[in-house]
Image (cartoon, rainbow, N blue to C red; front, side, top):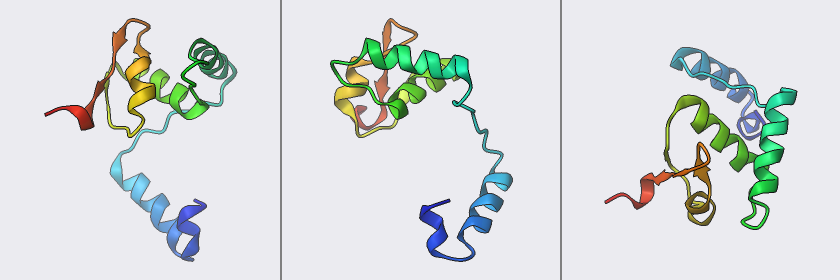
Length: 94
């Protein structure tokens, strides 16, 4: 909402877009998910992994989707999907 609030209609238009799109929103603020994200961040501390990266890995695992569109090649080349499989980086596919 912060970025779209430059226009007075921005927040309303974003809310309408999200509602109409059928987008699913996942809650990564629950204690169990926060613990899982913190564990991943500790595991990949040498990369390093931030909270946003950790939640993307958790979401990919929840959706069983290992393809990811990211500019963070270094991180997502190191991170593992379901702890063993590497991610397929969409921007690197030919």
